[in-house]
Length: 348
Ligand SMILES: Cc1cc2nc3c(=O)[nH]c(=O)nc-3n(C[C@H](O)[C@H](O)[C@H](O)COP(=O)(O)OP(=O)(O)OC[C@H]3O[C@@H](n4cnc5c(N)ncnc54)[C@H](O)[C@@H]3O)c2cc1C
Image (tube, rainbow, N blue to C red; front, side, top):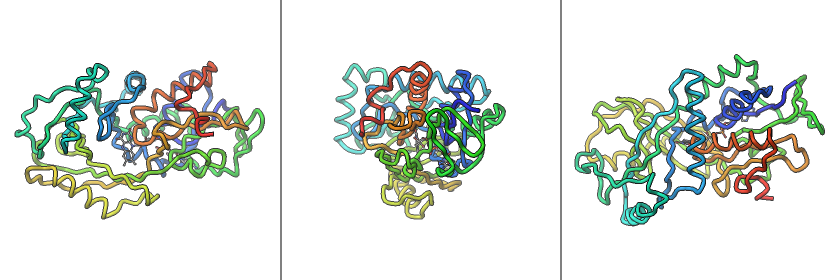
């Protein structure tokens, strides 16, 4: 007998299970070995000031605070290193972006996040026509290492089952959820983009957006900073970096394509002002679980209050999920209301 079944061990299911087990709850996480996990493919970037207009959310401080404490706790307890702090250099590719930057940098709420660059642009291996700025509180989470370590930890806590969930096997009662010969008081769906097939939550505006990403090896030294010019370049060690990502709303599959690879390589070469001897190590594709308003989809089913959705983290899961896992935990355990901005009720 469990308190919660959690369906999916991406970043969402992993962090929620982590928190619920620490709160003394009996959990079973069911996952199909990350076959459909966008968390497995993600670069794990944390960037509080995003988009062409370079804006931060009103929730950014809360997101960062929880992300810092949650990843720190996991690192300390599991003795792993998953959070990497790296500054981000924002390269402006047109005058409009530079104008947006200048407007933001004089606003008090951005003071802690944005800094005028004192970098010698000529010393950088990139074409820079409209200037650069520095974004702080940035870095990345090594999501593959995180998922692998949490899976192992769940196994050690008898809280993991590798299986493909068949919705027909889920029997929903007033008080109990039955799955094969197992029972739980509640079930929480953390299925990422596959939530689009979920019969209980399929009315939610969850839109899968395909993304492709390259891991490249290089010989020349590159600055140890995330470079963002719309596309981003993320150094993962002295010789390798990730480069991405594409956005494709039309093809809902996880197949890496030659077209996207070429698109990314062309974008990289166009931005470089030197010959970089690069070798392709890996090319991956995944589907981001985007919501209509770019905010999470959290809340109980209208008819079955013991059935929850925890999804919709789009392209910002690494930054947002720790906060919303804590938010849902407080709702489940202390009956604190879910905030309307993330509650699925806003779409009913
Ligand atoms: C190319 C790319 C780059 C990205 N880069 C970043 C980035 O830099 N920073 C960032 O924050 N975010 C990034 N993202 C987005 C990020 O991946 C998501 O925000 C986040 O990982 C979503 O986590 P999740 O747990 O909700 O979903 P998922 O990671 O998709 O996890 C869902 C899990 O449920 C399992 N599952 C689903 N259905 C079933 C079933 N029926 N039975 C059993 N198991 C099931 C899946 O296999 C998977 O393991 C990127 C995504 C892509 C595709």
